Length: 273
Ligand code: DGL
Image (cartoon, rainbow, N blue to C red):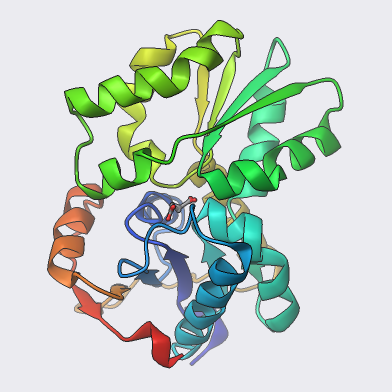
């Protein structure tokens, strides 16, 4: 396969990475995507670094069977815990979602008070603070783990009084300390963006790292001469989705999030990789 026309691999623990895949589809519409959602082993956010790294390595090996030209780790937890290890072992470029999100937040804050909501793992790793501080030492970062958001999103409770109530409990302390920027530091969270925005109020800028990640991917492909200039051929299966469990449920989700034709999903045994 010619390198330019090779697909991009994208992965997450479940449906969250679809928010990143959707952005890649919008910004670089010629690219083919192989998406893997680890639906059998979600959530990653409460697991150890060792486990998340092992899972991530298996997924990278699976994606490489498609001769992908690059991989996007569309999961903050895997980006925080495993990206360095994955980069060490890979001959193709691998990008995560944390750096792009940190960059935007450092740029848009006006009062220097940035909140990060994410999984326990991402918050515990302090990775957002580390990257943001490298860009601007004068900001203060407040991290808040929101472990219940991932199951609520995976259950499809995007607009629901239960999600509202839980979001209020998690976010009150960030409202009280007057942050002006909130990073949605888990790729599942943009799916409850309207709830989060309503609770935080109009003065707080919500940063969704998906947009910046797609932009970074585009720049990387351009720089390496790997951007696909050819539009997909008629009848070509441009987007392929694989999961480790529950393909039907995932397919329904994917079709409600991504409006680019009817998508189907296949279950594979990721433990074989
Ligand atoms: N969507 C993922 C993230 O960005 C992982 C959520 C989880 O599996 O806990 O962190």
